[in-house]
Length: 138
Image (cartoon, rainbow, N blue to C red; front, side, top):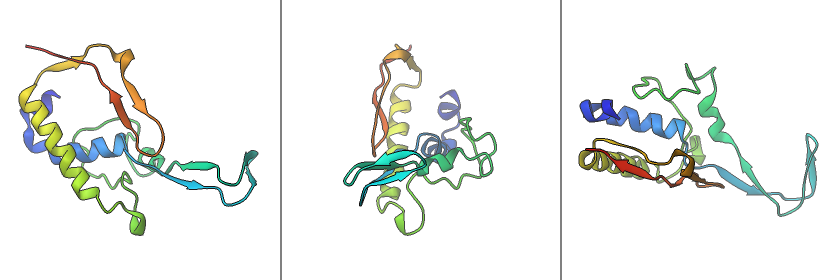
């Protein structure tokens, strides 16, 4: 946070790392017919989440893949899918994230989690924090 406040020019690169590290979307599909896959039974019309954002933690593609690196230079992540399955709204989502971070840290340059145990995350296709209790510092 201190680096973003001190180096606002870092924000575009930081946004990409936020997206890589906390990929907000995954795809789901309906099972077409009863099947067993590697010992896991799936029934027709069950929902299956496809864990493609796990590619963002591939150590073969990213140095220190499980570490948030705010100034990561090489960052071809799959946060919005790839190819023909890339999210059509990805550029709007990037802008929204950049503006949200920019405005928040401009107004509250110093803050901390007030209760880290109370942070909750949404499950399912659209992932992300649902509750983040913060305390603004002077």
